[in-house]
Each structure stands twice: as structure tokens, then as C-alpha cells.
Amino acid sequence: MRKSLTIVVIGSAVSIVLAATAQMQPLNAKTGLWRMTKAIKWTDLPPQMAAMMKAAPATTTYNSCVTTPDLNSNPWSKGSGDNCTWTVINSTSTDMELQGSGCSFGNNAESTGDVHGQIHLLDSENGTGSMTVTVTVNGQTMHGVASYTGKWVSASCPAK
Image (cartoon, rainbow, N blue to C red):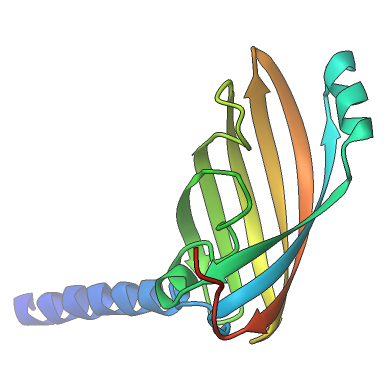
């Protein structure tokens, strides 16, 4: 009886480890230079911030240099200006769910925020993503929803 229980416990532990490993695969994306397009819609903006956001472009484009280690974290965050600490919640070869914390957006040292989102690869050269954003600036909390498209451009990145 004791031997059977030990085998069941070990078998269960191995199954849990294998299931967790299967969920944390790197994205199957090409490394190198990616061109990212981000559109964000904000809510709960104070009037002064709402006026400023109306004057800002709704869509921005940036380059992200994706390396092999990035395929296990947030490959599209480089160049975005979000400065978050990223944690991957789940990841397969085509989909990644992640959480960003301690974000300071742009050059605004007064902003802090958190992000939760998903990346979906259509193929190894094209992807989409969405992020929900909560930002606090000078005591004012705002919410946003960002949508992303990513297109692989080349295998090499420009020198810094």
C-alpha cells in the first residue's frame, strides 16, 4: 500500500511539472528587428490630461530588437518606453499572457502603473497583442486599453 501511494504521489508530481513546462514555451517568433504599432484608448482621464491626449497621436510606431531570451519574456517591450518589470503567466509557441508591474511610462518619473496583456503570433513574422493599463500620475488614476500589431522586419538590429 505504501509503495502504491509513493508511486501515485511521484506520478502526480511529474504530471504537474510536465503540465507547467508545456505552458511555458518560448514564442515561436523570428529574432531581430520588429516594427511595432501601438494604439491606446484612455478612460478616467482628468480634464487637463484628456485635452493633452487629444493632441497626442492615437497610434505610435516603434522598433523592438527581439533576441532569443526575449521570446521567454515580453519580446515587444524594448523601445516601447513602458519600463515595466515583466512576468510571464502562461506561454505557448503562439500565445503569451503577461503582467507588467512597477511601470514608469515614457520619461514621466511621476507615473506608476501596471499592465496585463496577451501576445498572439499569427506566424513567426506577424503578431497582435492587447494590454490593459492602469496608470497613476500625481495621484490621478487612469485606465487604458492598448492594441498592438507587430511585423518582423529583418534578422539584424541597428547598432546602438
